[in-house]
Image (cartoon, rainbow, N blue to C red; front, side, top):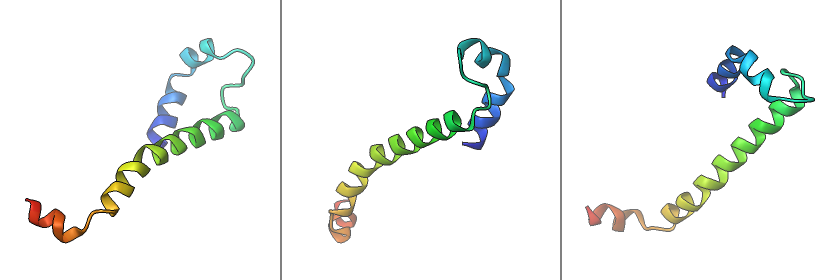
Length: 64
């Protein structure tokens, strides 16, 4: 997130040309975008994590 924030700040003029009616450093927009990305990452990882947690570790180790 820090790298993404630094990249967006470095590309201010390009980002400014794309945003209409929104300030460049609007904290509400930045917080909302970060929350959406975190929620997407959570939901993308929750299904594989729940499937991996349901497998017996000894069965998984013997499979190899």
